[in-house]
Amino acid sequence: MRPASLREHGRRIAMIPEELDEFLGSERTCRAATSTTDGPHLTALWFVWDGASLWLYSITRSKRWRDLIAEPRVAVLVDTGHEYAELRGVELRGAVEVVGEVPRIGEAQPDLTVPERLFARKYLGSEDMAHDDKHAWLRLTPTKITSWDFRKIGMATDR
Image 1 (cartoon, rainbow, N blue to C red):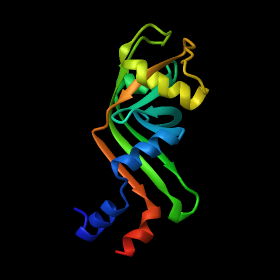
Image 2: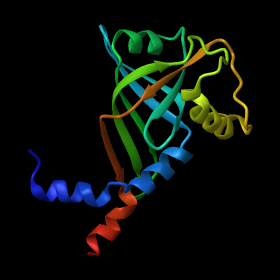
Image 3: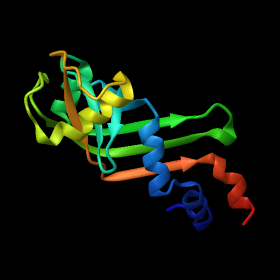
Image 4: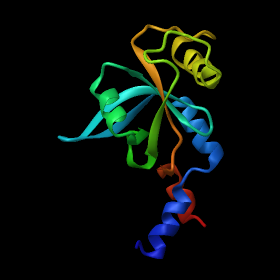
């Protein structure tokens, strides 16, 4: 168990829900760690956050896709910053589930209305999602979220 001082420090630099939503809504690339028989496999991909779930738009013929179908537990990292005092990030853990057809060709799917609108705006500059018959959606509703914003370190020591 971590000493109380470390737990308190962690709480001070953690993002509040509004900060978490803003951060995950603005960052563009995440890294997803999957489990394989050869050990961890780490890949980068685009994502959207709807306030409750992280949506991964993955190529269905990728090793990542095969890994997640075989073992849906995943850890996803979104982070940014160059200097130590600028570092921010979020780690999300849980199991993914496939939503919609595989591969996605655009059939009506109410559960995908929000993530596809968010994705189209964020990455395509459009209101309409383009489907390429190569990708499909994975939804991660995290069971654990850990966040940090080192920009708060100065504020935390001023208290």
